Length: 345
Image: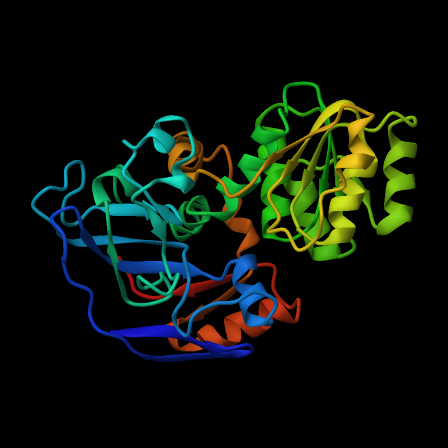
């Protein structure tokens, strides 16, 4: 099969990989329909995080081609969403809501199993991992939104849930990438009354507004801190959603959160959390990689009935052979998030 291959920083190629097969009775093989490039993939692409040479990508939807003898709830021909972590849903960590820590689980495209940026994927623990999509005949826009549930929309939702966003809250979202924009949509979905999006780019501001942002702050660093505090009468926000992971974004979230609030942090950390800065204001930090498998079923219904349209963050499209350009477009900020069309339904 054809698949994207990580060769090293700034070096993505498309080449041949062995066709996936059923190796365990709990496996399934999924033919990929849509995949995309994650912001965390860019850390590898830029050489700022390590990644093994080989298959890459962890966000995909597709059609089940084959299932192992012990797989239940999934059948050949099903359209499925694959969360970026495979899990059994039965270990102690899964039962307590942390499917990303499943004792038998792992990440697609982590060097031990093929990623989603290819023509097919072997999915371990398929019965616990894959979520079938009901009905057929979904529009292209719906399929794009379904794809976001595999990671980016679930991650934005996790930021909002971790920060305890509730009806009537004032929320600030630090970061205008696909995760940050998804967090705006998630905060709106949970009932936030005022949503302050920190963004310096007009195309991203437009989507933030469409997703529910009521205010835009274009400053960074100390200027952003002052602007948000001015907008909130010096109080700070009820929930700060940190969706980048840099030191500046982490520091901003800490500065604008009101005393007694919680910061939802989902940006892959490339900085230090300033506990001493927030300790005496009784501000909590909560978050991490999203347990997408637990969130997808509730978000799926809202996508299918048109309540939310998170696929708007996918503003660059190419085919599988164009995957290197998909990475370059995001790296050069020509794209918010790149969609890879692998096959038709």
